[in-house]
Amino acid sequence: MTDPLRAGFGQRLAESVRARGALCVGIDPHPSLLHAWDLDETPQSLERFAMTAVEALAGEVAVLKPQSAFFEVYGSAGIAVLERTIREARQAGALVLLDIKRGDIGSTMTAYAMAYLDEHAPLAADAITVSPYLGYGSLAAAIGIAEQTGRGVFVLARTSNPEGAGLQRSIHGSGDSVAQYIVDSAAETNAGAEPMGHVGVVAGATIGADELDFSRLNGPILAPGLGAQGATVHSLRAVFGAALPNVLPATARDVLRHGPTVDGLRAAAHRVRDEVNDLLRD
Amino acid sequence: MTDPLRAGFGQRLAESVRARGALCVGIDPHPSLLHAWDLDETPQSLERFAMTAVEALAGEVAVLKPQSAFFEVYGSAGIAVLERTIREARQAGALVLLDIKRGDIGSTMTAYAMAYLDEHAPLAADAITVSPYLGYGSLAAAIGIAEQTGRGVFVLARTSNPEGAGLQRSIHGSGDSVAQYIVDSAAETNAGAEPMGHVGVVAGATIGADELDFSRLNGPILAPGLGAQGATVHSLRAVFGAALPNVLPATARDVLRHGPTVDGLRAAAHRVRDEVNDLLRD
Image (cartoon, rainbow over all chains, first blue to last red; front, side, top):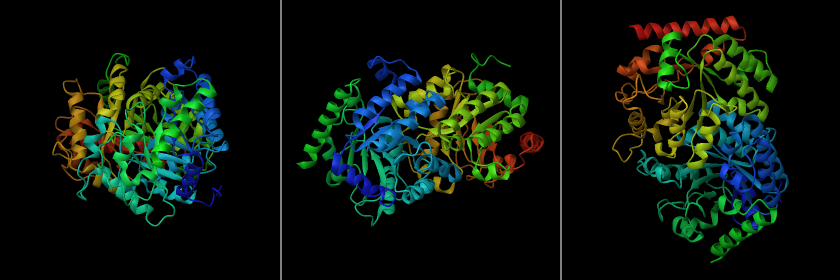
């Protein structure tokens, strides 16, 4: 494995996907999933849930994606569980993409980057999701710090929810949609990087076929929506076309509902991974 | 004071502003401010900073606005300080607007709402900032839970940073700008509320004069940018026009740099409040 302090995130992700398959599994401790696992809504149960997911999956899948909201509900006790979740998942060999969708300006954005992309931070992950409502340029501090620390950022471009279309398809001054402007801005940052750059985009596997042009992106595409939201591995080809090799499909509930046993979770993750592998091999 | 469990956020804010003046002071523990106060970058110093700000200001100004990013940098230890900051500021009579700019979909947005807008949550504030990149409709859970709990949400519309213009001025399917679409969506939610609704917008005091039409909003307008970012109390009139009575000007560094003494902070807050009061009385 490449030295993570020297390799860029694009290279680290490519290696992890080559070794483990192109799959990102969310750690989303919904109240409904806690109950399905016979757990209550306490920080102790949250920890039990997250540690079970880490035990089952962190040695298996390329990327684990804890959803920060479900930890924040429990305040500092929940964040302590999140710290442990990130740390143990990384130690077991998974890349950790923390799904936090942060976005702010200036010194505040720098603070978010220091909180999640600096190795010495209690919540240091391998990558985070960020939100570009304040402009792609507002994310500069996170994009710069991620590059320095061998980490990545995934910028929301075109999300899988129906309410997202109106804003994300608005026409930017460039003449393209807002979503395409985000993809193109990431492409500029990633230009020339080998095997790909460290700025990814988020684009739901449920959006229209060929709605966006990813041909110059040269970065990873996180594609949520597989399973619970209705997208299939076959929709991936329609939506992403030639960019398919850079797609990291994400699922959560389709794996997590097979808990609480480690074996059940692991078998479910293998099934989804094999389905994705088959598609990419076609 | 109205019973906070019965009154809506619009009413609670109007009463607080009537009693204390229209001013929101940020609690932004920048590293540079910590150093200026002779503090280092530790959770203990963070707590000292935040508790000093609360002691100086929570009995004085209408709204205190802790910036979550500067607490998240310290992981769970920082979030424990944020819990205490919110709790003690509210106990001292300030409304607490937690600046977190969260935005997500479905059950994740519900989790954010439960984390920050439910009275039993460790981080329960009076209002939060939210980001609409996933569509105004994606915020429905937060807007609904805030209404039930007498709390508020402030939706980013037109931010004070130069990088924000491109996306926020993009043309939405409605024919208006994205920023105007957000203002109009909030207006729909607030229609008919007395004295105003619980969905505010964020619009920088540095944007162009009359760029947005706030005439139907019937909700509060958080206007950052006063002081450090170059806006003056006089720009407020140019930007907001007839909506000026609903504007809550926000400042942080212009007050915080007068620490670390409680007297210095309090005197600075009074100066800014009096300036704003003079403007609104003209």
